Image (cartoon, rainbow, N blue to C red; front, side, top):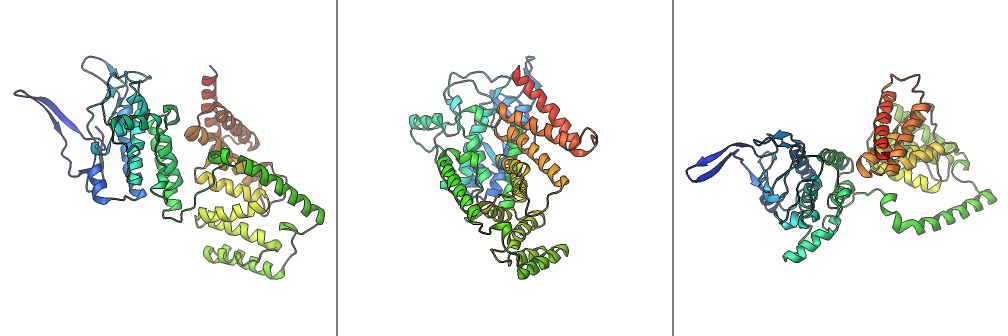
Amino acid sequence: DHPNILRVYDTGIFGDYFYIEMEYIHGVTLREHLLRHGRISEKEVLEIALQVARALRYAHETELTTPDGIKVHGILHLDLKPENIMITPSMEVKLMDFGAAKMLLGPGPAVTENRVFGTLAYMSPEQIAGLPVDVKSDFFSFGAILYELISGHKAFPAEQAEALMEQVRAAKYEPVRRWRRAISPWTEELIDKLLAARPSHRPHSAAEMEKELHICQQLYKVWGTGARVSIPFSIRKHFPSIAITLSIAALVLSTLSFIRTCSGSPFAYDAPISIEAQAILDHGLALERAKDFHKAVGEYKKVPKGTREYQQAQARAATVLFRDLKQLSTARAILEALRNKKRDPYVDALLGKIYYQLALYPEAHQRLEEALESNRDPVLPLSDEDKDEMRYLLAWSWDREYQYLDKEQKILEEALKAWGSFYELAGCAKASKSRRCTLATKRKNILGKELSALAQ
């Protein structure tokens, strides 16, 4: 009994016929909805997906006892497809047709099937191969549905059964961005994660998938949509293809830095003071104090390049855009441009906060670590309170990378180390009642137990 699952009221026999009495739905199947509306917005796709995820979570986590006394610890749908999902006029989603469902009788996978039952284009590789299946099989099918809703094309379009089964087994599909260039990067990454050939690379539970969809929704609101969407750079994702380029770039930058040092050329904070630039900067600060944030940013952008005040003005503009105007994309672009010219702990600290809010956790902890380890004077002041917040976000970045992105032990160890560092340097032993210290203690205990369990 769940609002996103078609309710069954009764079953029985009438004469020689079995019957099922079900809830009547005013609406259409997701397939019909897709055919009627063609291209569905990403916002609507995520709203539909979240309701399906809630239905799956309920089914996967349901506890019941059969008339034979068998204890059931979850139900797998195993036939997810657009035809088995209905949508009402008020956009309420109803998951239906559990005809292929299997019971989970314990923590392990459901029983192995000796026959293929379901719809090939939406089945998981392990389901097609007749291997044991668990909740991750439903997630693969869910990913195929998401792919189709976003792109308007099937992830596995082969028409002949043998070719189709081969596509699914190998999880080979066209990148969804080929069909929809404006897709937000987090939705794209979630689809790729759901359609992973290896079950271990997919979400571990429907609750985890639901959280990731919430993140996609929030970040979609931040970044919006359209062909001009700016996709944040992900070092972890693209590292194999850019390692050599980075090495060469590092060598070139080191050489330029050496030449500048030897020649004594003014750069960044060593640039000459400009009375005119300082006056513009002061005016921007006055507008910021008056909470006229849009005008303040405009004023900061008037400060000419090549002056000492330019770096400060750019950093202040990025701060206002991030903190007060919630324009994370624009703030990030300004800060990355500054960072390309000269590494600065304030710039790295603010970038770390932005990437954390964008759920780009590897990039977040990289920037925060560089800020905390830097011995340079920051372009804008960093107080002890700022550094405590940086350590706190650093711990959460490692923690959430472990929770949502990578369940590797080394990530868990880094998260535990980061929480320990925050706990010690924030003086939590003396201020244990503060909210952050309470959370740090809780996360240390939870992660410590997980690490002990892995060690065993």
